[in-house]
Amino acid sequence: MAEDLMQKIVSLCKRRGFVFPNSEIYGGIAGFYDYGPLGVELKNNIKREWWQEMVWLRDDVVGIDGAIITHPRVWEASGHVEGFTDPLVECKKCHKRFRADNLAEELGKKIEGEEKDLIKSLTKVLSGVKCLECGGELSKPKKFNLMVEVGLGVIEGEKAKTYLKGEACQTIYLDYQNVLNSTRMKIPFGIAQIGKAFRNEITPKNFLFRQREFEQWDLQWFTHPKEMEKWFAYWKEERMRWYKSLINHQEKIRLRQHEENELAHYAKVAFDIEYETPFGWKEWEGIHWRGDWDLRRHGEFSGNDFTYTDPQTSEKFLPWIVETSGGVDRTFLFLLLDAYRKEGERVILSLSPRIAPFKVAVFPLLANKPELVEKAKGIRENLKKQLGIKIAWDDRGNIGKRYYSQDEIGTPYCVTVDFETLEKDDVTIRDRDSAKQIRVPATELPEKLKRLLDREVKFE
Image 1: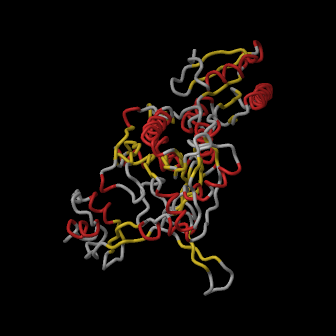
Image 2: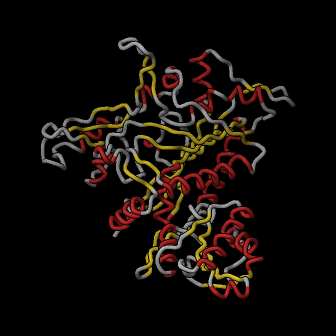
Image 3: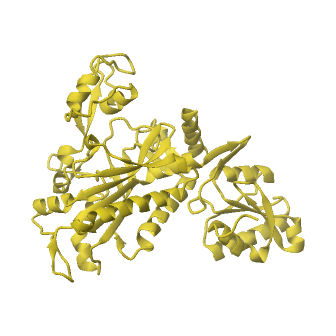
């Protein structure tokens, strides 16, 4: 059933224009996807909600938009060139590559926690394991760097080697001092960013969950070391609250602390907000205790001093950092998984109205009646102007099929113009989740829809 749900989501995404395989006409390329007409609307709505929550509604956070390519020394300072690796095994017969830790997990083999050397531990537990594709002999596990290299320069053989972003947050540290110098921000404060990241994943899988090109949203919160514990607890609670506000199934989200052997090189403590997917509990967003790792390392490698002087006490200190870092594409996938349900022949995406691609759809009851079509188009244009939202138009087929079509793409409300509308100047509003309908005067329609979309009133 779990696999069936993923197949349904993948099929829905392509059929209705949410997500397409990249370069499909050439056979596709693993780990890359394109967002279609509905997908780009949903994705942009999700990002807008995050940006509003993290930047617009706060006076203590500002945003930036950093470049995808940075100076190569950035990734040496961050530890990615040396430490951003995954364990890999390769079949000696068919040359299929597998991520060794994932392979061990799939086979139910436990990686001993007391063995600090991951490669040594994986070599032990995978001894004798054959290739899952052809049964051939597997190589011993070896480290595989995830950074995607790029050459800068115009002359072949003389290009400088650098990297595409391995994670979105590094440009925040690079611009930390610029932000302080150009704004009135004082510690504690945060810098937020949504940006592309690239990882040379060994085995991209589970649709949008693990890709080679993806988007991340990051908040880096700079604080006094003595207040680190307070802010770390605060951001754990805040981020859980926000994700819970977007989903239907509260039992499918949890906060899990990392074991010591899971911690990244920069983290003293880390928690993951996880969602129960058809392929297990998976990371949605990480909240990391980064301490002074990043500013200290970039200070050492660049020769800059990032010491902060408190304007009131004149105390000097190197700020510590709380990071909240999540995946935009994973959020897209998890929200679709959470929203999908089926009632008989009716497929419903119960997406929050805050993120649905279309907020409202407007129909004429019959497409072959000019007076209905004209009235419906006028109502739609008026709603677009007054509400400033994306509104669908559909005059294909019968009204029942149109309702089902909008249910499948997550449109919360449908407005139907019928012959009674021409007589009484009122319309029918239909609710996606309950399929119930109410009549509303056309003059009151914009305000009614606004309050319904904002969840200020119940559908009645």
